[in-house]
Length: 83
Image (cartoon, rainbow, N blue to C red; front, side, top):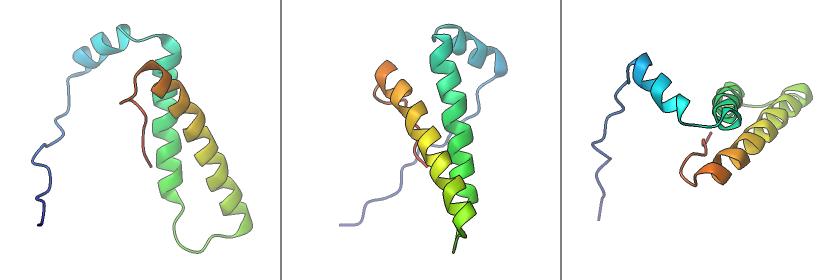
């Protein structure tokens, strides 16, 4: 059986709503969310055959993502960011 893709479409939220949501979260969780997003973006940057320096940079980004996800998961299990 073939499953259909999700029909949910991400909808941008206004900055004021994002600020209200952010005000409800502890500062370290907000910082972890920013760190996880940046690290995931950095991981996506590395594709194809990698030289030794690029592999090291990718591993560093994956480690940063894991650290941030650990904080996010501790706060709420559905918050971690996936690369």
